[in-house]
Length: 298
Image 1: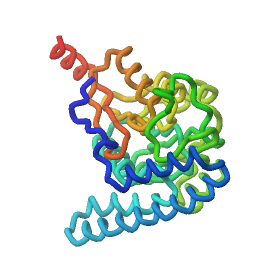
Image 2 (image 1 turned 135 degrees about the vertical axis):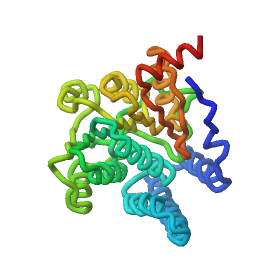
Image 3 (image 1 turned 90 degrees about the horizontal axis):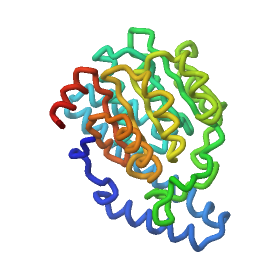
Image 4 (image 1 turned 45 degrees about the horizontal axis):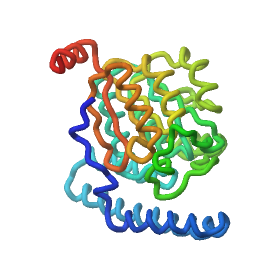
């Protein structure tokens, strides 16, 4: 596994982000749950509004530069940002990989495991909708928020380097909320999109034969068990040349552990590429690519 392209997004984070994380972590330790929620939610809403304002300025700069491909990407990203916790670098990375797969004609569905409020799902489905082929999208989520972490998720008493704690029920988006976003707000085709409700261990294996080939597999389950379950259930259906995104690779210890173990156990010679905000992606090798990489390693 090649991680040479990787830099730690938390080491490189702005002073504002580092200060925000430290402050919120400290408040969570000293305040009762209700008091913390009363402080956190208004502050996070302001933070998101500032982020969208900065991104809007970048979009205007891209317009002035005449970079139409970048403008299209950024317009789509800006539209979904109010419905996503991912952040613009991660959304752009996902968009660009999906666009690349469409242009290259890599066969298969776009699949996301861990939908939350549906912003990234809407972005993925928008790209799929621009594909002249009948490319489908499958979106899996408990629609009950996150489960509890397990012992495999902890290191030194923490589950990761989140800007806020992630108790059971975090990152909640209901299936009604996501359906409304995709089909009413974005007017996406119901014929090409399937929402699957339930825990990954109960839904992925019974459903995977219906999905058939996968071009893009986006895993956003945060925890070790969730990430491991998605990779083990669906990786074999990813087309050669397809892309796998691990949203929480740098932010959740369990997600990184599950990914590293899976890559090592499969002896996959892949290069991890950072998404600029804490996630990573890697391309599933073709048989020829894998054989060449194995010869180079030997």
